[in-house]
Length: 468
Length: 150
Image 1: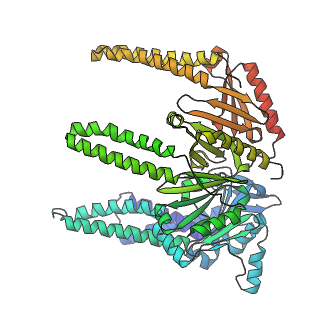
Image 2: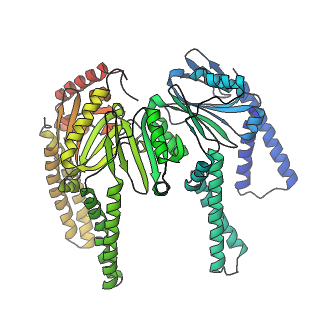
Image 3: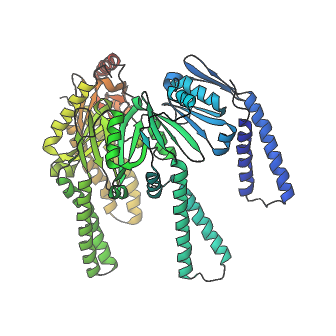
């Protein structure tokens, strides 16, 4: 089967745009408008010609148990993706593509770091066919088209209030990048304009304020654009979601591949009483974290609702979280206090005895408060099905993993922990190194640690019966 | 519970000795240039600390191939206990580095899909013991092949 012919236009546009950006930013002197126009047109026509050849040489085949793609103009490539290995299919369109009726399809397997199959672009019907070939027919959607009504039962529809709230309090990664670039550019521009004119502190403050305002607004709008119309539903053992205003995305989270569930609530969210639900699958999770920032199953809802969703989707209750040993507070106090004790002599040498004393007293007070807060933020809990651990004060995450996901069990006791009679228990689950989130119960009372480890292990043995 | 062979301590000691020698080789000219005898004590301190640490580390190591999991304890500053269920083992290697070969010891490395999986290695084994353990673990792993939970 072929890609959409209309796609040639979009691909050529992308290519020509890239070429244009390079010429503009490469520092060559800007040519006159006529020459510039000719250049752009020539680049676009060349790109169209090239993309047409690419289109001619690109074929995909829906076969019984695999998807086969043959492509390449100079270097031919044939790729086979077994259907059973496919984890995710994402459909993406922007507003123009939606009007024209083409869709970009991304196919992910657990293997490599990149998207294994990226089909740019398919006719809308072809994209739907491809998806139903891989996932089985979407009966809801068919019924929906017959009756003309939305009969799908959504598990979560983001309300307008939640959308606004989420857009306000979460930072989009592209905003940070853009804000940095804008600040640099603005600084450079101001330098040029005000060369020779002394910049008053008031004006500088105003500029900074405007820039901050622009960044916040951009972040807000970007989040609105991204999460507008977010809805999530379950078909079989898959969670599917749709989101986006101009750029619309339909994605899949395979529940049977879920390794753990993570409820994340930063300080701001805890104060308002809302939380985010994330689901990690092996292989895909780490990659998503790295590339796109965490893709939330539910971006934002009240804490109670989030707990409900978690138990509905995964079929378990979130266990009650119990506090860790109070000795944890001591451990963190000793750790933080170490800094102020080290720092005080330095202050003494640099300034005066009085300053050093103030530094030490303030440092001790801050250490004590921070240690207590950190101790209170930690916790763990378990029941017959799952183990949960909570960590972090600024960005608090409660990770919940079923026993049958355990890969190995790691108990560790540092010198300070042994002295204070505590220890940590970590349930190692499958994932990609630093990006995986293992449930880790820190500073469990020493007496309880060994029985806890044995209990977790025996629950694991019971749960990993062949029925799974 | 089984301890690693004594040769593991000697193997680690040889590394300490090598590092000490290298440090000494560097610190002699450095102390001549700086005209300070203090620098010369560095290799001595290193050797002393290294010896004590190596001894404690050797004593802290123990392992057991149990009914359905591998049990491993080690660590001087942080004591770490690991349990690796057989059903989770992806593959088992035996490895020996050039120095280990001189001391005639080998290690068994157990891989799981876990993010810290490659942490798990049983060190200080005679090659024939290592081969035996590898075979045993591989058999267990094959037996429970259909349940890797990824």
